[in-house]
Image (cartoon, rainbow, N blue to C red; front, top):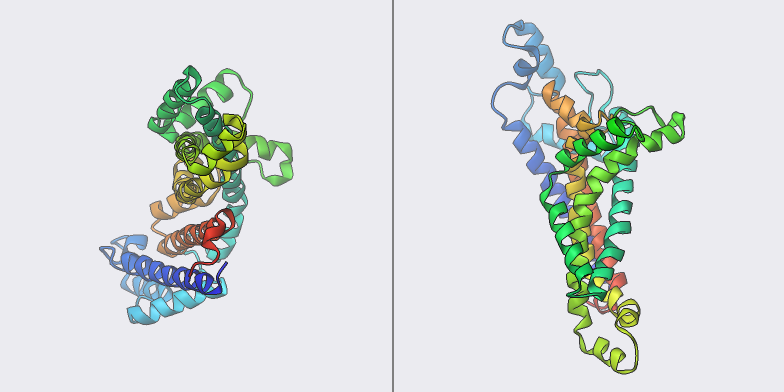
Amino acid sequence: MSPLWLLRRIAGLLFALVAASAIVFVLMDLLPGDPAEIMLGTNARPDTLAALRAEMGLDRPALIRYADWALGLLRGDFGRSLTYSVPVAELVQERLAVTLPLAMMAIALTLFIALPLGAFAASRRKSLTDSTIIAVTQLGVAIPNFWFAMMLVLVFAISWRLLPSGGFPGWSAGPSAILALILPAIALALPQAAILTRVMRSSLLETLGEDYVRTARAKGLTRAEALRRHAFRNALIPVLTILGLQFSFLIAGTVVIENVFSLPGLGRLIFQAINQRDLVVVRSVVMLLIASIIVINFCVDLAYALVDPRLRGRS
């Protein structure tokens, strides 16, 4: 991996984070109406409005407010929630204990389904099995995850009573906490697994047509052996691209899924903060989610260099 290539990627990462923070701040600052008046109502007393504006820093120039907010983010200070009267960092830490395991379970389930299923379909191209997998994944792409989540609740929680329908008992509850995340993780993972399966199949079929794979087949390897030994690793490059993009969809999906299952995660926190007009929470949590997506895509770039040795010497 070239040091210059790595430095350029790090510079791109830092630029993206700064640009994202500026865009989030400007968009929140340009929202119509007075944030203090929105939170307190039109009948609030002028001195109460003035006190809240001072607490939110609205009486200072925008550039200074942005600098204070951005430097606070670097220190881990996300501000203080005006609704809950606690630091936003505490709210984020508490909610991450639900959202992060949920996202990791969804990603693991997506990979567990998509990679072998895509490889299986590619190894049996134009067969009935391949056609069936394509049809099922097309259905998975078309179904909205919130509708699928409700169907999971109807079948597994209400009809069969195998899993809880919602809520989160806390990690101190042990296995019950894991059970509470199974249906939400499935609802998040299956639509993404359907997309990734199709990408994996297409990537493998394209790789199987390369000269080095045909040479391996000519030496006596079966199609499945050539796929496993030679094609699979190179086929992972476009899969990594899609996987990085899917992380952003998973984060966006938690806003809906956590509300469907009444999970106290970041998605539900954003939804509640918007309803309560708590702009301090909305701005900081949205920036945190955007930053996590940018960092994940940076990690995907690094993974390219590990999967494809040709990238290691490029600048």
